[in-house]
Amino acid sequence: MKYVDEYRNAEAAAAIAAELATLVDPGRRVKLMEVCGGHTHAIYRHGLDALLPEDVELVHGPGCPVCVIPMGRVDDAISIAERPEVTFTSFGDMLRVPGGRRRSLLEARARGADVRIVYSPLDALAFARANPRREVVFFGVGFETTAPAIALTLQQARDLEVSNFSVFCNHVLIAPALRAILDAPEAEIDGFVGPGHVSTVIGTRPYEFVCREYGRPIVVAGFEPTDILQAVAGLLRQLREGRAEVENQYGRVVREEGNPQALAALAEVFTVRDDFEWRGLGAIPFSGYRIADAFAPWDAETKFEVPGARIEDPKACRCGDVLRGLAKPYECGVFGTACTPEKPLGTCMVSSEGACAAYYAYGRHRRKERV
Amino acid sequence: MLERLPDGLAKVDFGGVRRSVSVAFTPEAKEGDWVLVHVGFALATLDEDEAQATLELLGEALDAELSA
Image (cartoon, rainbow over all chains, first blue to last red; front, top):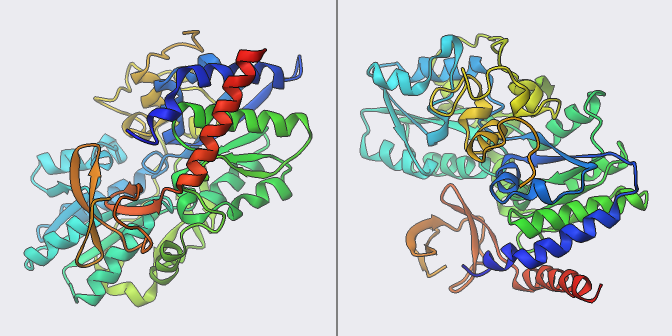
């Protein structure tokens, strides 16, 4: 396909890889975080880890929306889904995420709850209009990439006066998560491969604090092999020259100012929460959206009582460490044994964007393996 | 993108599969443009000049490698 194949050119990738080796000073260890789970998958799918110089390590960040949902919120979702009047709609990968006692929405469905997978929140709204006797709830999960779609759906629900539709809002913000990682001293990240798709919405300005306040470079990157390699080259160049700037490698879809229409929809429909609980990262101030008061009739948390319990992550699962770049999936004791894509214990194994799922799918079962 | 439909929708060809998506966030998108689609919404139109600039950088990396 045009504008995909060109960025998978193997000779060009090899040429950049050869250049990378010249960009690292001998003896300097460099730890880079790819923030976005889409990047994690591209790296292992295409074997890019094997093209990096020995001294350059990639660690995985929190940019996997399914991965960062805490178990208590999954239980809240299940409690709504189990109400007899409710049809609960969700993107597919949330269904297998275990809540407390390892119960998932999929199991709730097996016990009789009306749980359905939708491709788009607009499909859930259309279902609500076609079924006015059902209370249709959509499980809102995702970063600023996904939140505008939910915002526009809620605007339409208001305009069309659809009263049997609501959203259980769990939307999160990428910049506060980056700050939480930078504030944790143990991670010691030298630079960031910045998320691509979320940046089409928010633009590149929200990352400026990474450079200004923390002195780290960040390069927003696309998802094809040469995109990611170019971003790593950009980071290594900045580190060698002592610079810390926001660079945009993904200019073909990311603009500095982001998407004004999407940002306007977010501003109208959502309000930033004082704090939001993240799996592995704990409560992060101003890191999540709730539905704005003007849209309260479409807020599932207003409409239905939810338990709202805080549930500790299972002790055996190291998703929290994986999400902060402190552990590799294979360093977790249950990786590939008690926790597999078929029967996941942790969210990082469930999601198609999770680091554990990437390591499992592409055979990085033990350690960095040369391909 | 193939064609505009009513209600802020457009028909998009995903390498063979056709689906209607919302173009509410990309009012500038027109027939023949490439759009980035996420959960049924076009989030960005592809800037062909920028795409070309990235490809030229790739070409330069390749040239440097060949002449090294």
